Amino acid sequence: MTEKPADTEKLLEIRWHGRGGQGAVTAAKILAQAAFLEGYRGVTAAPAFGAERRGAPVSASTRISSKPIMVISPVENPNVVVVLDRTLLKHNSTTSGLTQGGWLVVNSGQNPKELEINGSFNVATADATRICQELGLSVAGLTIPNTAILGALVRATGIVSSESVEKVLKEKFHGEALNTNISAVAKTHEITRINKQFY
Image 1 (cartoon, rainbow, N blue to C red):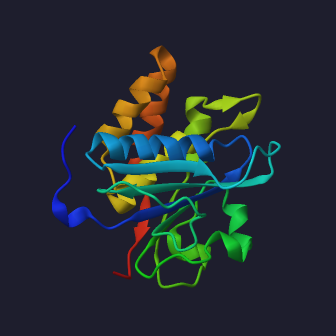
Image 2: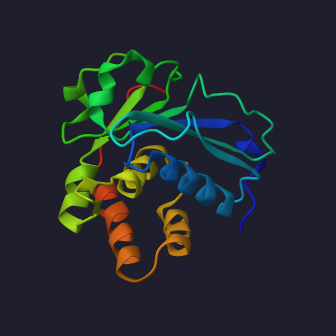
């Protein structure tokens, strides 16, 4: 594990929006673990709500800092919002509070401009669902795009590296499941489309 340089003391807040069964909470945890491996001393990940039924909107959060984190309140002004189901974009609460120059990362086959979302933040899209369907990442007929969308997050933001995400996946999966999830991250990283206009 490497130490982060002193200029990374800013608290980074990521909010995840998905539906029950898509793995938003797991993705939040994987990102936190990857950040810890990269030397961030403060990392937290938590669901914003309790257990929800499959298909119902859910959210989760990840906080990352080079210093210990004492904040436990819900994320209100995220630097990054990750959306696992683009139909959730119809709710204003999904992008609420997203900071100027931040990132909106959406699981969508559309390019960022086609989403027609107004705000002073950058947008990245990747069809993580298609990648997962091609690789067979589903449970009981439900596609689970959570690991795949991490590839888009890494590509757009650079918060952590693909290598660190892969290390965490190696702790969680084995055999063919590991290879499939690593492929999902790599393939989604490759197809991510970015519209960066704000700093």
